[in-house]
Length: 401
Image 1 (cartoon, rainbow, N blue to C red):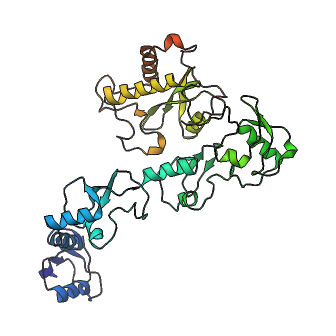
Image 2: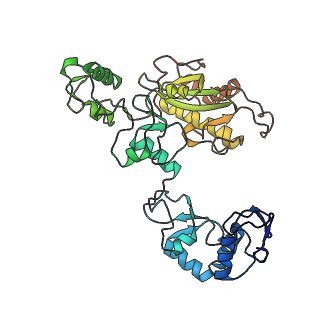
């Protein structure tokens, strides 16, 4: 044991028992068996290898590639290094250059030991793993669900809010991505519905059916009237669920710069206290603020605009003022999860900010919003420019942009 840089701390018992020792190289407390140390010594000879981490570092240094080998491996792996190479066992920050890589040029970690053994450098191209950011986009796009918790893994239930009906759901990304299953049981197109349930769902999509008894199933066209333009329509509930829209004349697909919109400021009192700036359509079918309330945010102020583009410009001006000109940290800099709109949040109490910004209030932040709206010249252009303490019941359900 001594010849192998391990100092026993207790008397020897037998070869297969754990033997508490101290690594003479790094000082770590370890408990190898005498049998394991003796086996390595018989195979490789006595050497001051020490504990397992010390031995692994020695092995990594011994197998470190020279410049020519490293260059050849980089070319073969089709990667671009973003930091200096250390050894074969240390994860190496690189950029995958494969066409169609799921990371789309974003940094990945590469272990050259895996590459030298014939494995793919990019575990995302190899489909061995899905990056949390990519998983978020998949769930948002394929499942129409906005996650409300960090990514747990492809086979684990992932809590979120259905963007179609606002229900709390917990689908697995594997089912949404590969299984063809809907993420929400409440509004899935293959869920059996009673005529009353079908009627309610059609109305939620802004369609007023002509005859409740005429409903057959979610894949059969159902004659009705568009509740926005009063045009006759015949959509199936399945197509509405898939986002095709009920009326070609006025269907809505996300935030519309030409439609009325709202700039809102949210407040969360739980530590650390935060505020969030955002925009949403000013329409009864929206659920955006309802979803925020479900995530423990309170609506502090709202400001309606007749033109959605004006709301977008005000939001951009506020984010530029807070996070670029004043240098405040947003949620991304603080390591917050992406699902909570991390580019739009600011901590109210931060002693690291310069005076007079150490202690903020929702009212002070809303004053910034009103000032920026005035500087952009929207004050005389909008009918309502005073802050509202809460949004109306019809607006409380604003859909995410």
